Amino acid sequence: MAERGERNRYRLIDVYRADGSRLRLLIHHPKCREHVEVIRRHLRVEDVTGYQLHDETLSDVDVLFAFQCPDEVLARLTSLKWIQSTGTGIDAFLGHCRKNPGIMVTAAKGFAAETAASVVLMATLAFHWNLLGRLRDQQKHHWEPHTNYTLEPLISTRTMGVVGLGQIGMTIAGHAKQLGMRVVGTKRQATQIANVDVVYPPEELNRLLGESDFVALVVPLVATTRLLFGAAQFNAMKRTAVLINVARGEVVDETALLSALREGTIAGAALDVFSVEPLPPDSPFWSAPNTLITPHIGGNRIDTYDASATLLANNLKVYPDQRQMRGLCDIGLGY
Image (cartoon, rainbow, N blue to C red; front, top):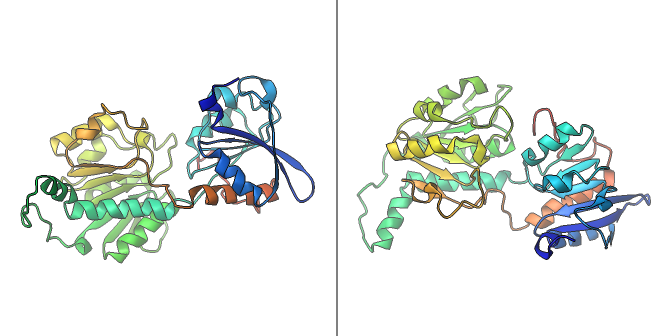
């Protein structure tokens, strides 16, 4: 039997649909109890008791609902047909699904668009108005309105670079346009996009970096984006530019980023994600110059558990009809 703390993160239930068919669902999440109560509002649910996480009693699970799952548990889900990610990313499941073709994956696509874009907006304005400096002055009880005080250039003269024009990226572009900013972005298929002045293909990333005052990272974590940003990219940025990462920590070479911050290669960074989370207390990022740290809040919504479980419930009703299911992902692309 798994330890109590670990077991509290799991819930095994049978879900009965309108046609009488049953799907066995494993939920892995700290708030699994809340998720079950939401699903219960939409479908008939029965708890499965007496199961063990580390033996073969999970072999008849049809569906997994999780943000990530230990490999040893995934290996026991030998009948798994479908994974619904509780978040927008599916990078935690790509390796397993590529080794076990035929598993369908859906995610809460667009679920975090407004919240992640709001974090980018917050960071943009914080650096534009030197909020870190203002907070240091406040802690010292020091009133100095003019030192390092941003009056020029106006925010409307700045350029926002969006690396990854998916749903989150397009929402960021809309916010930036409302501030009067010029917006440039990257997309695999470079087409005209609302609120974006110039769309570059990924191979022209350095052109975007050379133009941008703020660079927002919102790409999915796949093979081609892992360590996408390293020393070469930081050197291509303006020395006055700020990096804002709401994607995944592994998109950035964190050693190169620390060097860029310490050496003044870039002006600052707002980091909502890291390669290791929670960020360890001894991480050098805590004391890195001109760095704003937030604890992966880009996906936080007041209705987080309700919304993600409601999406799952609606998909459970129509599974396996992919035409009606929302958030279907392409394992080959990684999102």
